Length: 322
Ligand code: BYC
Image (cartoon, rainbow, N blue to C red):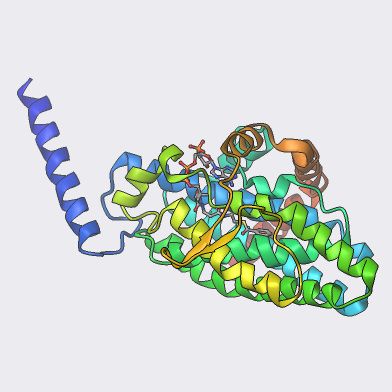
């Protein structure tokens, strides 16, 4: 009995010290003591983020062979490769918390892990590639720039590089939209159609409203997240509406109005039921996304085997030379 009491007391004083560090703005590093729940919340968020980047390669990747010019093809290829790189930084950050890459990837492939609902919608025209960059990466930059000040060091460092690349992707997407909005009638209609399709999914990237976000209170208390889902969603709307207006496109929201008192736009709340349903079931393109990922893992198995064999041979050769 006394032992349990001592352990509880030790645990409580470690937690108090951890929270003092968090309040002080300290950065937590992998070898520092941390509550099990802090570790779990981080592994959950970072691995979901990694999966979103890797699955995010698919909706745009299917346009690489159909990009309208060599310049567009090169830009899109580089963007899709960047997303793969982001996934790798993030998996590595989650590994510092004790998660294994194999377990995280298995959770994704077996349909047990979530990834951003944005990736479940189909890209039906070339303008959708522009809209995914402008709106999807644009939402990503706003969300992840806030996360740069997260309390966990390896996540913050991975995000520093990701944010720089995402903001480039946002500009590349917007530039595609500018060109199409400036084009003939058909191109302009494609640009408007893409904005109509991607506006609501982009708003959903920020998660459910604050009063329906189960992870937020602990995440905010321990500074994993620094700003609330609704605060970031509002920032995105306020930044993006003028960009749409500048190129003569109409944001598909009849309730959109500038609100002088709050200094921001009023807009239609997201459809939380759809967000949670799609997050759970993978939505309309979700099944294809996982099927494509599983096929990529299976078809790439020989490459991984060859690389491991090569690395083993090099280690053996180095051992013999020593
Ligand atoms: N989609 O309590 P909440 C990119 C889940 S990719 C799916 O508010 P939290 C890009 C949520 O996980 C970057 N699921 O959660 C790449 C939770 O489920 P569990 C994507 C969602 O974590 C290629 C439940 O709903 N960005 O930019 O406090 C091309 C309740 O939500 C979604 C990141 O990953 C969703 N949209 O807040 C283009 C950023 N929303 O785990 C672009 C890092 C919520 O309890 N992540 N759920 O079963 C975050 O900032 C936070 O995790 C979220 C959600 C704001 C997304």
